[in-house]
Image (cartoon, one colour):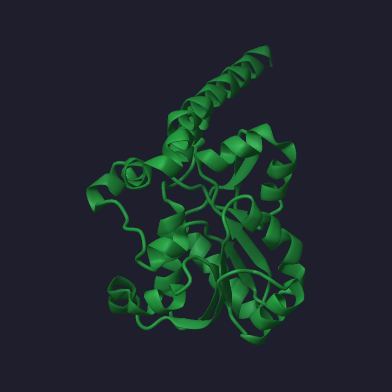
Length: 251
């Protein structure tokens, strides 16, 4: 892997999105296991307060930084050596469908009719050609049978949308039993791909306010995450910055 950048307790991959896509393509071609997750500020907060969860996240092959908060924190901590690019998990998922439309996808979670919705999503179909959904599981019930179904699908990319921390735990626990080279924790990403949730207008995406649009969409579910989570994250980043400055001055 090119390089990583430690922000609080998570070792984020510090490469361009296009380079990550190239790595995924190589892993599919060589049938090499590659597991990806995209922590945002909320997940980073959880990892900071729970060392076991931080260890779990850091065991992924690649940790894609999700969103404006992680990007700004990297610049505050490391200046010009911070993250090379700002992107979101949703950017990554749409890009994967764009680049690998001719590959086989298997979906876990999301809404019950997720494959059908993705099939009817005019944005995906118009821009990224017909999507090949090799199979899906709405709810995991029987661990052995579920993995057999996944393996029999001969999928190239497995997208797991079970919510944090369950999806990360499930991926790490089962990755070696699954014959799919690329496994990605996507959280609510399937809802955006299926058109159940709408992304923020492009102008809000460009200035880093997609999180605010999501808050307006789901205030009951997300208000604590943003109202309390963002100040906690900022405080932790400031404390870490002071530690780094003190360490630099003492050397």
